[in-house]
Length: 554
Image (cartoon, rainbow, N blue to C red; front, side, top):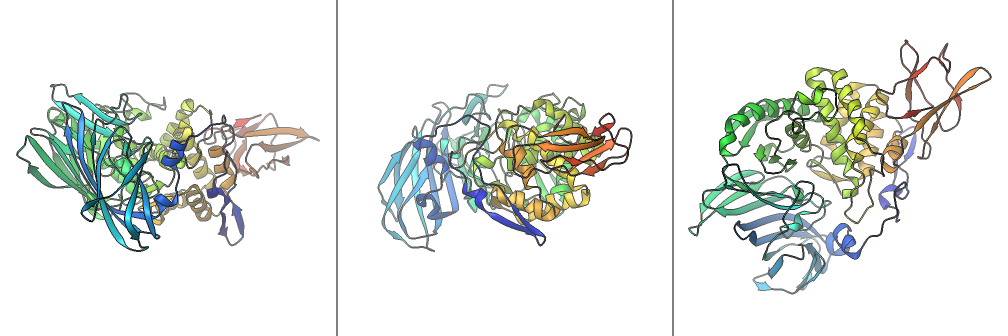
């Protein structure tokens, strides 16, 4: 498998030395074969990197009876180099009616879900330009959203139409034409959704205008003022009602807009009205200001479980605490709050504010957001409770394959990015052993990479630099290899020795060890046996902190 160039970057992190983020293939997984379609979807070629997206105007009409959509998307862009041809993306089952540039149709070709447009003249580097794509068709129907992608067509309990989009992973081009790669977020967008009269659409950002089109449809214009992932752009159509609130946050008053189905307004006021402000208080403390004050914060009831749609979090947890009424940790702490409100909103910081350039690094979204659940618990129930929750989630870890996926083919790694990733971050916090520093690192990530797309090296490098520690081998082991490390003890000449058995080069994770019943002391094993320098410690009374460390001990 091809080695990602991301890992060939050497980062000078501290004056004391240079830490190398290792370069290697995705180890510990079955050999995979990728197609031309995979590469077209996931790779960055000059036909994609030649233009930087500045603005979309997505204008789509939903014919619910026919499960048919039609409309257009305006692409405004800045050329990053001279070019005459570019790629955008739209699933092949949707028809492109025409592509308009400077008032005239221009030619295009299609290969799988990629579309190649040829311009009648050279677009010069630095120039701003635009084109519009008109399209229509029956988009893919999601059978198990949000785990698969497409449009959800259903009815509410009163039999009224209820429609939603969910397309993370598979990509926004499953229902609208777009430059479908996470590395390039559009700077702002106008989302115009036309729905049958009597229904409302709720999309991202702020509602600018509602227009009766005098043809049985009403158009809802929503404007997003901040950069946004294209998979976050949403349409939610139903019999919605609206109520609002205000949160006094770090950057001043933040508008809270709640959109439940009309008959669930009382449930929403009770459930959302409690947990949304609690979530904001916790996450602004740990991560810094909510990243999208200009666009507000919304919760929207949906017919699927949930999704981190920026400034319009999709919610389908049936107004229950836990995850559909269950505690994913088995500790009891997960039943004291609404999982979807907390988890999906946590993505506003990790996933929406900070976005991985390649879906192979979706751990940046999911590991931090899984860990955010523990921090939420800590905020209201104490640090021990938060760590008990993290520890309890280990029962969900599979250790089936690496968490980091293959690059350039639009493929995620293991689902262990959630629970194993959350445990990894709790270990990193334990190693740093300074909660103020740890909080500053989390806040610093969101400030340094505010509204940016990032790589593995960006995130790991930043944490190492701010911690003042070479934690790169720790991240390497837990993210690039399916197996967890083993701490091995032996007795030689009456003395206790320890070493790590691990896959990552130079693995040397500091670990907390104690004489049973005493206080923990950090030791620093390597992959070679070294003496455990703790007075009175023996093989019979050594105790390792396996509560905060997810490791094996021999």
